[in-house]
Image (tube, rainbow, N blue to C red; front, top):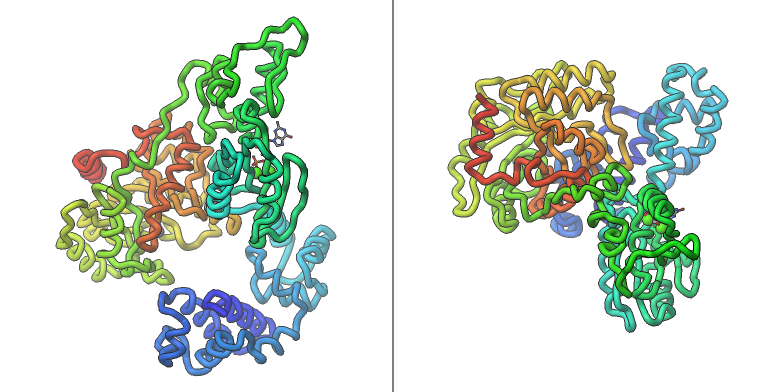
Length: 576
Ligand code: DGT
Ligand code: CA
Ligand code: CA
Ligand code: ZN
């Protein structure tokens, strides 16, 4: 077993012990042990070989023994015995947001609930609300969380889709008779989460493609295998569709399978108005007498849009959110490109919860070809992330100022917690010494919307804050945003000339792309960050740029496309 699997078992043990009413210290020890395993970068096998497990924080002899047993034998009798005390489904309830051991225990003991379905039924019958310590509101929250869970289980992060699709795309290109291959669907549209992968191929021999596609080693189930279309499920749970067409159909098919459905419907309506019928493969006259536009033999997507009197619509914009009106007027924006980025600001190091140190981060940033780079470790209230005390931040500022890089300019910053009342986690005297301050919420996430919105706006109005980090706190497919009136936050940022970040971490992609178009037109400044916790993470800038494109953002809307001298000027101005 690896570190992650063992940590997961420790979490389960903690839950089981808690349900049994075991000693709280013992319970916490397992939780700490799990976290410690997840946090260490060291190789587990090596730690065991050298007898150094107990050097990890929070791991004593007893836990070290158990880790060793799990790592070498893959099982632990103590855990297996414990697990038998409750049905398997009960443990799964842990995935429901807001359900801790105490509540799971009550649900199991009083209502015999041992599965998600059982829980849903009990909630719908109002039984959960009547339990002591639950009430109607809790029941509503559980139902909402169950609904979210069902949706989450069906979708994947954009990055997971990308990683699964890329090697397939490369191999498809190499198959005999294959002329063209594209990824289509939501992945091509850079949606933040995707349901399944869609591949489109133009090939002379569809059969070769079908056979190869359905017999990939990673395929766990073939859902359909036809002459020109197939669907498979991969071992990791990802589903993928493929369609083979001829070269003359490819442009039409690519538009169709890229979607979105809403975009397709609009395009079809436009066709009908012109007396044409648009299908997955071609354009045909509705009546014999209607005249078709002239098109090349093998039309590209551009050719098709042009035939409709539209300029090319990039896949990211195909969501029926104004792209037709823009394309009609030739006003499709020149979307930002990853090459436009000259640096990023939200970056962690080993001083807080990052895995790479300052030197490693800077070297990685140099390799990205950037001109500047900001460091923003956590502040003291984020103790779970090893946030910096005032003294440690002072020392870090000095280290950053002393650090020499011939290629990069370094900005000293912080990711400063916004405290529950909207005050910042560091005194002004210290904030003044920094070049920038990202302000983020990491605690008291369950405040009501009014309180949360006021809290954020107070921090935005602070003269020494620069930009808001991950504005809604959402974790895609895992945690809903905290309650906040984002429209008011946007207005406050515009009024106070503050920036909102577009957090490129594939789990966050926060602020949501749906809000950027209008906000940027109103004058909101964007900064695309990676929220890097290691040197490799800097590559996630692409994920952030993808979403920025989806939000219609151009270079001019994004501050970290500015030249060094310009961004220095902007930051100085902002800090008065
Ligand atoms: P997903 O997979 O849920 O993330 O979303 P998509 O957009 O990839 O949807 P998917 O895989 O069901 O279908 C791929 C594309 O095929 C979709 O974006 C548009 C097109 N398409 C599929 N079904 C329909 C349909 O019923 N009507 C229209 N107009 N287009 C469709
Ligand atoms: Ca899809
Ligand atoms: Ca599909
Ligand atoms: Zn961060």
